[in-house]
Image (cartoon, rainbow, N blue to C red; front, side):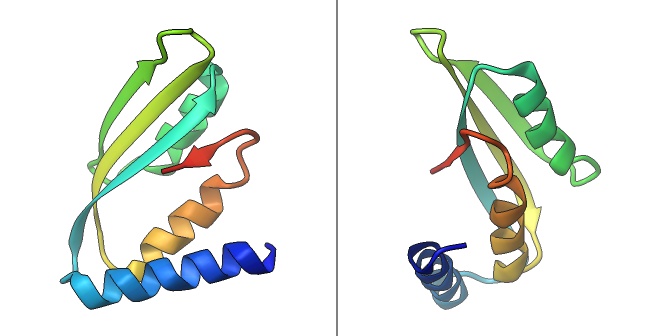
Length: 94
C-alpha cells in the first residue's frame, strides 16, 4: 500500500471514529468491471454478516455496481474490509 492509500485509510478511520457510534450500519459501494466472479468474491466476503446486497449493471454493460449495507462493529473492521477487497483487480471503492 502506498503512502496516499495509507493516508486515505487513516483519515477515513479518524472520521468514522469521530462521527459514529458502534456498531454502525455501514454502506459499502464498489464498482467492478463486469465479472460474475468478481461480484461473487465481494458477496462471499460478506457471507454470514446478514448483509443486504444490491447488484446493478451499468447502462453501458461494462461495469457492475455492488452496494452492501451491513452492521460493522468498529472503524477498523470497515478499513479491514476495504483492504481485503482491494485485492480484486479493477475494483473501485466509493
